Length: 432
Image 1 (cartoon, rainbow, N blue to C red):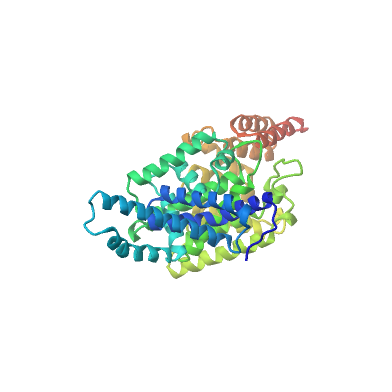
Image 2 (cartoon, one colour; image 1 turned 135 degrees about the vertical axis):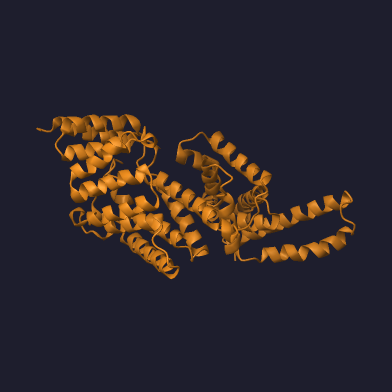
């Protein structure tokens, strides 16, 4: 059955929505048939163009996702036939074309019937392959798995569209030149490759949660895409604890989205948020994912991984009815464990915040002051920002003002800059 009475603008919106949901499955299926991600995306785009041409005239199919898939599959088969015909004409095959097609097509049909979950898993690991730079992995993942256009990716990361287009083209070429197989990694490669996948997903989420630059404090669409990708990977790899840990972390962090921004778009810090605006459904989903991570880790006789530890920290905030009820001592202990497991100056800076809340600002400031000469934090605006907060709590307001002003010069986000300058002005206006 087809819906005939839909306005063309509504049909175009429908096509856009279907594409966003189904494109990864279509590309994954075709890439399985052709073993070439670049060609697979081109054929999937051809199917999208066919929908844009036909659906306004003939109506939206009852199952639009299946329509796109079938159209792309048939175009892939046509390409395989043309390639086989070309080989036959060049004398590379000794059999006649009919004989060769009879022998070859059953394999193609078998590939058409493969489990889509396997195909998606192959696409995830291909798009996030370590042979690509982090920037290329992010762009290719959002393009192939997120269904975002080049323009949308460029706007999300405030990068010129031609730059993103070049990254995607180069990424496809790199995968082809390196002859990266369209398949999940072998057991001995899984850890490194999975780390790459989770890194890309979390990088996308973080850019949406706290935008690096621009006029907006958050970019919710990126958070949504990262969450969707994380949930897909969790379904495909239920036996990996860190996958569930990352999903738990993102679910709980995303639950605060509506409370993190005021009516005019201004940032609202964690301790000042109205927790009644936190999304309880996302919190429940996050806590459930954390339980799954714990269960998988226990079954494999493992401890928390880095993402599960961060999810446990987020859970401490989620479980606290008010800011005053937050278990900062546990959070500080979890950060100490994270620092041992995945040491980095950023983790240490976060530990300083928790220590400052649990044991007083002087204890936190001692850790921060030890990080002031850390080369990897040079130019990192959150270092003077955290220092300013601790100094303000110690009533060292002149030093706090200078720290906030320095942080404001380092951030590239306009909303965050205004927040920091406001905190600096508050220090200057305080009686102390």
